[in-house]
Amino acid sequence: MQLILEGLTKKYPRNKLFTDLNFTFESDNAYAITGENGSGKSTLIRIIAGVIAASEGKVKFIDNGELIEKENIHKYLGIAAPYLQLIEEFTLREHLNFHSTFRKPNSNQNILEEVKNANLHASLDKSISEFSSGMQQRLKLILCCSYEAKVLLLDEPTAHLDTKGINWYKDLLRRSLDKKIILIASNDPAEYNDFAKKIINIGK
Figure 1 (cartoon, helix red, strand yellow):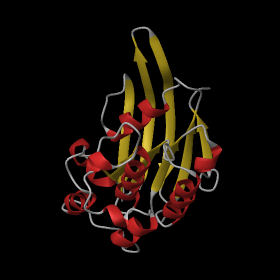
Figure 2 (cartoon, one colour):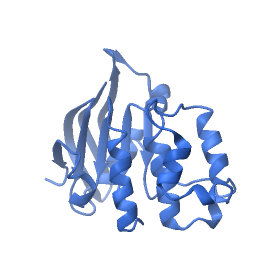
Figure 3 (cartoon, helix red, strand yellow):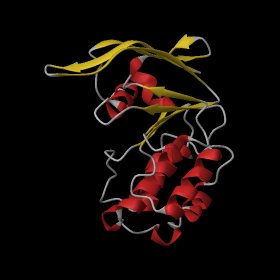
Figure 4 (cartoon, helix red, strand yellow):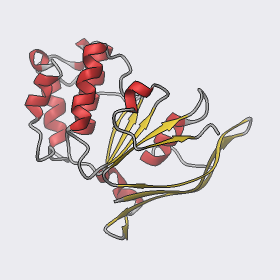
């Protein structure tokens, strides 16, 4: 699997975030996307996910030498970000059941065991509206990392997590690295130092 950025630029009428980004990301690798506040880290993640459009350039997903069509990219992606909204009316169990209708768990991971590892097993039948921000973040990370996807996009993955939660995140990610491209958008080395083989500063 390859994720290719070609001449990627994002600008607004009064602000230019990044210009002419060119990079090829490869499977079995984790990368850190860094840059000062306002440099466009979250924007880049959203462009790669297809949520917003670039001003110039292209994002290409190549699987076994074949270009993936834009409408099918979502099948290859897992994403966790502070701005990603969960369905508040759903319980945790309903979220898992819904997610399982379009994506299978990773072969080496048991989802209910991951819920237990995240200390969420007592909240399986609580609605998301009752969850703290930290609990919601742990669920987002499970949905992102523990189901089949070839590209994981993690934007500030430890937002709202305490020390115990951060240690859990690192253990979860270690179980999710195999055969994936992982992009971690963050300025906190604790979120990526154990994983990233390359650091890309888009603010330079």
